[in-house]
Amino acid sequence: MSTVSKLVALLTLTVGCHGSPFGHFAPHVVVCNGTEQLRPTYDYVIVGGGTSGLVVANRLTENPHISVLVIERGYLLVLHPPILPGLAVPNKYLRTDTSIPQSGLNNRTAPLYTGDVVGGGTVVNGMFFARGARADYDAWEQLGNPGWGWDGLLPYFKKSETFTPPIEEIQEMFPGVISSGLEPHGIDGPVGSSFSNYQYPVIGKLHLPLTSWITQPDIFSSRTENFFAGWDSIGVAINPQPNNGEATGAFYSTISAYAKNQSRAHASNAYYRPVANVRRNLHLLTGHTVSKINFDKELKAVSVDATNETSTVRSSREIIMAAGAARTPQILQLSGIGPEPLLSSLGIETIVNLPGVGSNFQDQPTLYMQFSYGNYTFPSPDWILSNASWAAEQLDVYYKNRTGPMTVPYLGGSTVAFLPLQNITSDYHSIIASTSPVNLSSLLPLSTHPSIIAGYREQIKLLESFYSSAHAAVAEIAWEGGNTLPLAIIRPSSRGSIYINTTDPSAASVVDFNTFSHPIDMAIAVASVKKIRDWASSPPMQALGTVEIFPGKNVSTDAEIEEAIRDAATSSWQHPSSTTAMMRRELGGVVDDELRVYGTKGLRIVDSGVFPMVVAGHTSSSVYAVAEKAADIIKAAWV
Ligand SMILES: Cc1cc2nc3c(=O)[nH]c(=O)nc-3n(C[C@H](O)[C@H](O)[C@H](O)COP(=O)(O)OP(=O)(O)OC[C@H]3O[C@@H](n4cnc5c(N)ncnc54)[C@H](O)[C@@H]3O)c2cc1C
Ligand SMILES: *[C@@H]1O[C@H](CO)[C@@H](O)[C@H](O)[C@H]1NC(C)=O
Ligand SMILES: *[C@@H]1O[C@H](CO)[C@@H](O)[C@H](O)[C@H]1NC(C)=O
Ligand SMILES: *[C@@H]1O[C@H](CO)[C@@H](O)[C@H](O)[C@H]1NC(C)=O
Ligand SMILES: *[C@@H]1O[C@H](CO)[C@@H](O)[C@H](O)[C@H]1NC(C)=O
Ligand SMILES: *[C@@H]1O[C@H](CO)[C@@H](O)[C@H](O)[C@H]1NC(C)=O
Ligand SMILES: *[C@@H]1O[C@H](CO)[C@@H](O)[C@H](O)[C@H]1NC(C)=O
Ligand SMILES: *[C@@H]1O[C@H](CO)[C@@H](O)[C@H](O)[C@H]1NC(C)=O
Ligand SMILES: *[C@@H]1O[C@H](CO)[C@@H](O)[C@H](O)[C@H]1NC(C)=O
Ligand SMILES: *[C@@H]1O[C@H](CO)[C@@H](O)[C@H](O)[C@H]1NC(C)=O
Ligand SMILES: *[C@@H]1O[C@H](CO)[C@@H](O)[C@H](O)[C@H]1NC(C)=O
Ligand SMILES: CC(=O)N[C@H]1CO[C@H](CO)[C@@H](O)[C@@H]1O
Image 1 (tube, rainbow, N blue to C red):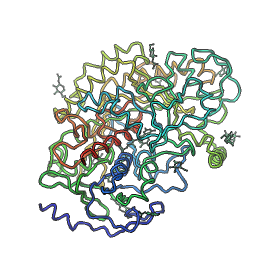
Image 2: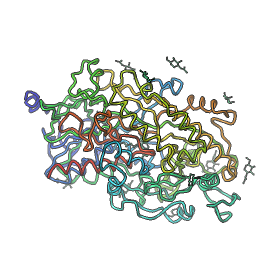
Image 3: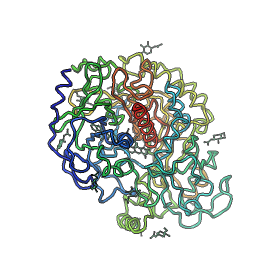
């Protein structure tokens, strides 16, 4: 009772609401409509106004009788100038944490990026917008979560999306590469999903050899066609529809953009701005960092503490965590929800001993290979950085016409190859056999709770079946046509952690990706580098005069390739996930299949931390779908 009564007089915020959320704001403003003041109590308080938080806020406030406050540490995006697809996102929206030294990377550290702004990761991300494979979500379901498989999530992928097929010129450039069919897409959801209106040209005719895909000579006008022809020539399938659950092969991906104006679609312009002015029941508090969740005697979450002016906001129904996989664990741990030994070592009273909070951390290690293209002297994506006069001309074209290179996401190609292990090497059985008898507990810290090791074992069983599946990609090779070619190991077996080491809420957590701790991740990376070399040596790629610059031809044995990867790879493909997994408690899970935090009442998590395993691909479309489903689950409790 004492907690509750303390909370009644808690509101020390002095600011009022502003009439319009579209202006410039001083720190600590309450963004809402009309003249209302921040209320002492809301039905729901959502922690984090990023991707998932804004989806849930929008859907809950469809009911005018439900009040929602979103608390976001960042600020509203300044809309002018807008963030163009083709330009780097200003650093002020990007937060960078640094991992501890990674032994798998020869003791180098690795950055962990997040978007600290209303809209979160989708404001700063690479706009790549493909779904994972059916296998990814079905694995979530198999880990004890009925309804979270591909079939259960598909309606929510659709609900979040408005798909628009590519313009005719792009379709004609890539016969058979892009399906313009509306199935399996959504057609009236908030997030634009489409294609850039531009392809970097190849000037002059390249006499490419005919392949099963290239059936007529001289049709080439884009270097991306060389990319596809190259993969086709070495037996990789071209997949015109990667969004129907079969996310394998070489494909041209959808991006999160509105087709009509070729601009970025993000959670703020999709889910917040359209309703901000019309829903009096939706409040957004920016520039405030939530540091703690408070519980009553029945372990019901009743309020949150937000720093800047130390203030507390109450929720009468639920508190919904949406601070992202990188941050939600910190807030839970500071609040006494987490591994008891960690909490007691910091003098934090344990409210619920939940060992999984901050464990099971997954991201996808990435190696940036470098190539040069000797025959290729025309505009290149690298010119955005290196040729200022050209970049200025292209900016002009974009503003006048919504065409040209500025419609292509900055250094983020949407042409990719997603390869199952059997399409990387015919020797895949021996890779699986030589890396599978691993003592999993030895890959995690000594004090790891047995439930976490049990959950890890369940995941590895599923992963082993995926490594021999034709329908589950393990490596992604992305190419926008420039010198850099990222290779990401998208279905990793390594597991890291994010734990606090201080009670100071403004300090960063200890981020340990534990990259390459499981040997199969490195074996896949080495095999993938060799596969990329086959592609680069294929006649279609050689027509561009392709030469590998890094790691380079003198790095040739498996051991040399492995050493080059340890010296140069990074831990993250910007898809941090799974730190508060939706799994059974005896498997180290943190939330149940209705996203409720075990041992508590009135507390859910809706961000990418709940993915039991990272999606083998990019995460944003899945974050939207999961949050849409979460909103329906929460609403179901109203009836
Ligand atoms: C640089 C980058 C590139 C990426 N590229 C792609 C891509 O090309 N394609 C793709 O699909 N995905 C990409 N992603 C990943 C994708 O954007 C994320 O998976 C997704 O946005 C995560 O959504 P979320 O709701 O889990 O977290 P977020 O969107 O990160 O939202 C969390 C929010 O909580 C706020 N917050 C954190 N702590 C607190 C606190 N204590 N108090 C109050 N607020 C807090 C944060 O400021 C943030 O706004 C990228 C991500 C990044 C960072
Ligand atoms: C990394 O650090 C550990 C611990 O300090 C040390 O034992 C190891 O030799 C280092 N590895 C490399 C490659 O430097
Ligand atoms: C993988 O290889 C198999 C067998 O050669 C082939 O049938 C399949 O299309 C390939 N898949 C991809 C994604 O390339
Ligand atoms: C583009 O269109 C979308 C959808 O209509 C809108 O939300 C967005 O603000 C527009 N962006 C720009 C830069 O005009
Ligand atoms: C509090 O606000 C000030 C600006 O007034 C800002 O510099 C500081 O970083 C904020 N602190 C936190 C913890 O958000
Ligand atoms: C820069 O772009 C211009 C076209 O705008 C082109 O003429 C010039 O050759 C380019 N310069 C370099 C160094 O590539
Ligand atoms: C403007 O767009 C049209 C098609 O929408 C295109 O034909 C034209 O080339 C573009 N102009 C420039 C300068 O890019
Ligand atoms: C596995 O590793 C753990 C932790 O290092 C160790 O205690 C255990 O004995 C190992 N088990 C086997 C079978 O080697
Ligand atoms: C916590 O860990 C970080 C490294 O991530 C380190 O820089 C910092 O000194 C540690 N703080 C404490 C109090 O141990
Ligand atoms: C491309 O360059 C290579 C040498 O790097 C050359 O052998 C080849 O003929 C060139 N191809 C074309 C189409 O110009
Ligand atoms: C390959 O060559 C580069 C540059 O000449 C050099 O830095 C690197 O050490 C060499 N690597 C090997 C494995 O010989
Ligand atoms: C319900 C309500 O007060 N709506 C107002 C919100 O603010 C806009 C302008 O910012 C007004 O046009 C609405 O009438």
